[in-house]
Image (tube, rainbow, N blue to C red):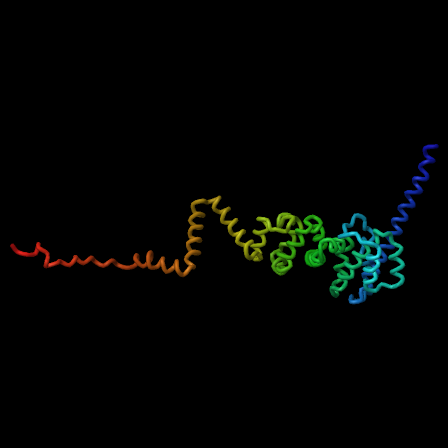
Amino acid sequence: MRHRVWLLPILCMTILLAYNTVAEGGKFGELLESLARATRRAKPLKEEAPLLKHADEIRGLRLPRKLDDTTLIRRFERLEGVDDGLRQKFRALPSARRAAMVELGEAAQKVMRRGESAPELLRKLDTDGLALMRTYGDFVAEGVDQMGPKYKLVVRKMGRGAASFYQDWIKPHKGKWLAAGLTTAYLAAPEKFHDALGKLTQYGTRKLTEAGIIAGSSAAEGIWQGLTNRFTQKPLFSGLGIILVIGCSVLLLPRIRWMAWNYLVKPLMTVPKPRKPPPQDHNHPEHFEE
């Protein structure tokens, strides 16, 4: 019995801690939802469905930097729609939650300014997507809008490399990505397309080349890789093909074409003239009679 008595305070503390966590989470989610809906440049929402389903689950969010309370309050005041009621709720939050509120509130209001489709996009992003936006950049919202919520998993896995790859190879070629059906393959295995720095892999080069996306040095690398693979499989025929390609490329130079015509082709196309006997010199002693 004595041992069981000690369990009672522990149980009470556990219940109290859980209650405080739920209460603070409820305040956080309610405030973040209010900030998203308070965006003045967003279309007024008539629906009551929440924009952020997991707004209370902010544990483990990786935010860009830590800020002091003065800076946090100043940035919170700059958010759209802030009134006395929202200020009171903000000051009631712990310091760590205030930093998350400012970062996520700014991201949520930025998304809500994107037009009529903004509420649906914000639902796809949810709180974890907003945190990724603040950590890696606004491309996260664009990627989720184009490829769906699964794109958040790509950003978590590839980090900054996902940002570089999106800016270089996805954003400028959205139409080709949709037409070629590359989205499904990329979401399933982004590491096949690029490395942690966003540089194309051989597989990514080949897949994008097939979709007509590759240009510049990346295309040259892809073509050279293809020639190398073909040469490994069939050295004789591939070697002749490489020589032919190089020869045709060299003939693009005007000077080389002129030399090839005058010294190689033209002599083969003309009939050689018969040689004339050398002229005889009549003043030579051999021509005098004895």
